Image (spheres, each protein chain N blue to C red):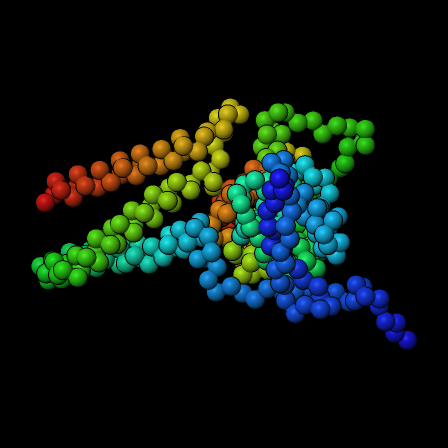
Length: 137
Length: 242
């Protein structure tokens, strides 16, 4: 036998919101996050481009590669890729303190020091690479 | 002179008559010391007794009154009406959770996730007598204390796009709770089996909004990223524990 429930005591029928296709446009922090994720595509392009360059050096076809690299659309693409890669690298290094908690004799190293160390190391490695590449040319 | 008021647009969902939530407007007094929760209580007590919402302590401790206020997950007891100028203020249930009625959401899934991470001190081997103390140094306490401040308000889940898109994601608070025990010197577990999963730490894309909205500064995003490092090291180095 079933008994009718009084008003206000009907069986629960929870409402589930439909998926929001534009979730990333609802908040600035989400839009910045998606933008950062999209820069990964240009980071991947940068890696592919450097591998092509290494291949050209190995094959002795650097002149043909240089001609391709000098085309206006390729220059524009690489300028965009450089900006995206720099943005990706800076934000990645800034997030590092979240994954690495460093304690020295109980004292927690503040985030800005870890970030500063990362950026300093990045600059040092970049300067070393630039020195080695420019010296050989 | 008439008292100053502010309009609250409150989501109503009455399953017996509504197919989906609808906004209902109420005018409530605008007082400098009134939180959004006070406005809702005014509606309940003086304007419309059928409005349903959760609350308890009114002092940011119990975590019951989390709601979406003008698009942001907030504790309504700590969010003041004066922050919204002349209004109106839109108040909706926390995003990402099924709505039972009005501003009340179903938290069964959340509670199941919390218990799935074994949120207690796991000991192995011989137990000391009940009268024994588990002594800790201040540094050992400091290692996990931040993660023990969580009040289970679920704001981090509502802010997390991964959870809103995939309700199976273990979520920020549960992972922070697991880390609260993992980092406790008295605990002997590392909860690898429940955390090293695509639906757990590896599902996190590190948006960071969970940390931004946390009213207790627990920093769940940090807890998740730290465990990613732990899990990665343990996967590569079998002898690497916690």
